[in-house]
Image 1 (cartoon, helix red, strand yellow):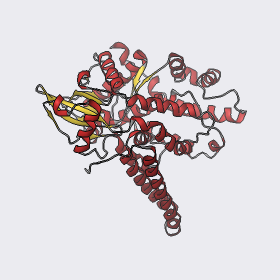
Image 2 (cartoon, one colour):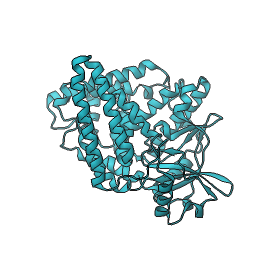
Image 3 (cartoon, one colour):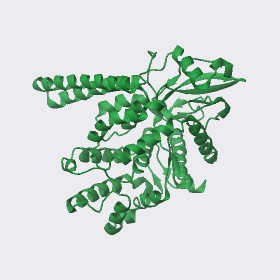
Image 4 (cartoon, helix red, strand yellow):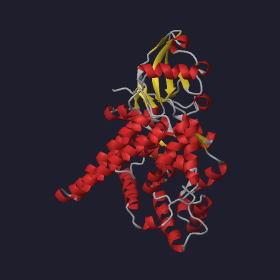
Length: 436
């Protein structure tokens, strides 16, 4: 893969790159209007989406940082984005052009004050994995194979300006009006700032790994604080296959169920026992070992769940509350989904929309076991998402709905459900974490 010798780090450089990308998108739209005259509207739109997704991703992968991280987050919204965007943006999970070896060595020295050769017995300056915020290198010390994650230069300093640039696009995509939108973007900004703090990540990694060490078929790398800094993390090198690659060829249902149960138990234990959760459940953060164990990587994005959100959030998922209109509406107000100033029309629309969604989405939480290989369940979720994304009525309303904590909690559950479906795990014991 081609390497990158320089990353735009100043606000002007990064803004210029996005403006030039906007110009390419504009040209794509001109082509689209001409295309519609000679082909069907559907074919023309598919080509437009493909061209736009490619141009936008090509720009973001050179910028890296929070701009690329937002693309990665959006790639998990499979029911909202056109497929072309999902496919292209999902590459941000674990496949982006790495920094060149020369830039790696320069960046390492800037961050640590020492060269890699002064810390490790061996260090490979060619990256083995590059993502949105940092890339990973192989090293060795005292006979132990290590993985060294190095943050891209300028990432931490450009978060606020990057988000300001992508904010108009996100607001349009998710029908967020200007009023009250700041709390959502502030939540994303806060989490992204935390993700660039590698001292915090090492601390979170060690805490959660220790708290979840008793969960069967789950493995974590060991972390080395003395070989880490605020921009560099050193951990054990873990041998395994990316979860997405494993699911492409696996035909062993018993193995899929074992890994799926470990994944489900890991998330339920964090949410219900620790009240904090690894809120970045994409395939690039999980490996499958040769003996069929789940290896968890990258604790940069950890969401703490406040009690005053946790209680109504899970009460809203209970069957008896979904079927009781009075209790259901009370929870919607408690979670800021409905607002006192809503019109009767808005109240009716959003209460029905969330009733439809929760009646379906909460099904796995209501049974003793659940079959996550059930394609019909995920098809219904996709159809419901498409139905509301195309609903013209929703455009009339302010879609700023719900507590800011929904952003990462919903992201966690959407990502977890998708991983469970990719594994085709069935007969998963939902409350198994209580007996561990």
